[in-house]
Amino acid sequence: MQQSNTYVIIFSAVLTIVLGGLLSMANQGLKPKQQRSVELDTKKKILGSVTDLGKKKGQEVLDLYKETIESSVYDIEGNIIETDEKGAQIIAENVNIAKNFKKPAEQRLYPVFIYHAPGNKEAIEAYILPVFGKGLWGPIYGFVALDTDLNTIKGISLDHDKETPGLGARITGKDIQARYVGKKIFNESGNLVSVSMLKGESNTQEALDAHHIDGMSGATITGKGVNNMLLDYFGYYQKFMEKKGTATNKVASL
Image (cartoon, rainbow, N blue to C red; front, side, top):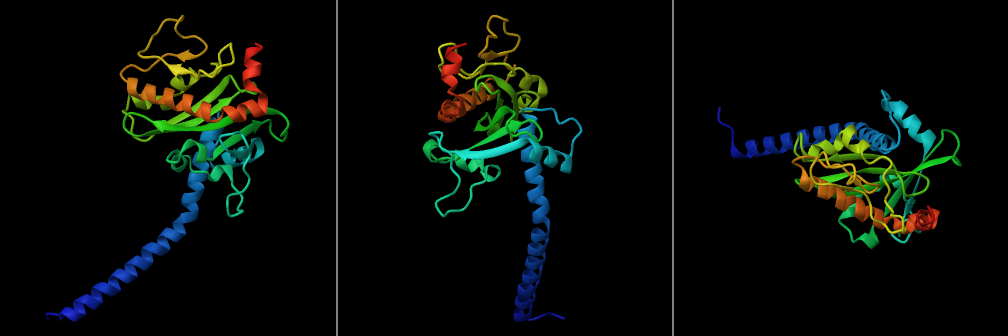
């Protein structure tokens, strides 16, 4: 039996409304799990820049984070920011670094995560800074842990969206990230020079000084992206570092 056009239209409308409602309910039901997943992933990367999480998962990671991390948000001048223009509290973990990246540097929020001994907030062991930049095919990002001298890299956790497997994607590997440990971001004169990945692999030991690491074969553009990202963000956080620990004076006195 052929149905009228009116029947078909009404049936389609009702079906659309019902399905839309079901999808909305499913989305709302899954939202807490999605938020927890994002929270867990972020906190794993923050902790991963400064400590080996081993086989820790889920709640173990969240408990360790709560026990060892304190966070604050600063502006580019190194001033702490506690509330937004509406008076709402600004939480470092909720700052979207990717969205911030689209704003002029002076308008961005700059989270700082302080890693301390479990249960002892006074025993600071590292300052962890988020970084964000552009690779060959898309965004690259991560967290850099600086020692208490605010000069020596204690650890780094890097990630990407679209870099080439086996080439630029190697920035996520522990072997690449380990190369940064112990490198200095200020030179002996107290000037910010950052740490740069050299072109090519198996560079001479003379070339691998306090401010340079070995590169990745076939991934020159990704390497340059990481170099630019680190130099830019250390620059953005330089006022914070100077106010927190007078970093350049410390380096100049070494």
